[in-house]
Length: 297
Image (cartoon, rainbow, N blue to C red; front, side, top):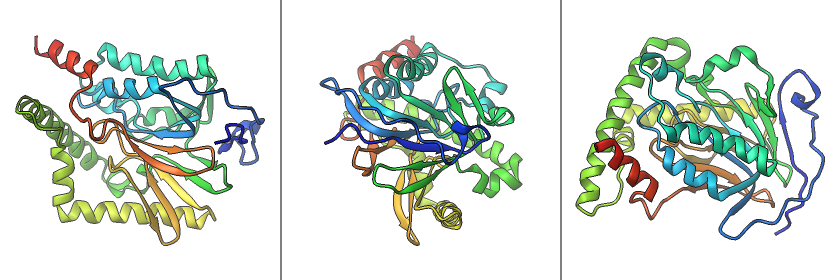
């Protein structure tokens, strides 16, 4: 597998680096150390740092073993909605921020941050370059095989967020309640020897209105990509990892790090894949186990 493909992904904005014609200079990718996963591009979103639902230890495990030329943070990285109501910031959440910065500082990874609705305060300052981290409202990524994808969080196509914000906030409280309940439920399951099981995901797919909502969301984003003459769309927001063809558009949702622990990846031939981190070994990683023990003391 060749590691010297030309990287071409272009944030939308005002200066040259944020223009659709911006193309970083070609550079040969460094050899990947043994035990590391090497990708051309990685998309992750919906960490919700600042909430108890964030699976920070699993995210740290992912960041410690993945290397890529470009890392896209596709919104809701920090949950300002939750932090505004109650401060919660354990050491592991700060460590996630440091791990992302270390990828840029120590490994030359290009970091592109596309804010979502939970970290929407950043949108007032876009486009922005802060310590080499690029912030933009949306961008277009070109894969190694020449396909072009619109990258955005996706909340702009969520009628609940745009037309009934109070309902979005109410739903956020309810969702966090389910996540807390899910955590206790899985603690009991682990002690009985059963693997992790997502209560919130189960409820999401059992409710017909939720399933219909997800379908409408996917179709709306695919329509936007088609309207712009692009090949696909990459988003987050609804905590539902997915990749499927929607009327000829490659719809990709990179999921979240509250329930799914997923990422979207592109290899050096331009092939896109959903990566489920810890799938098949969904008992706790050691850091998660220690964190849970500390919280119970």
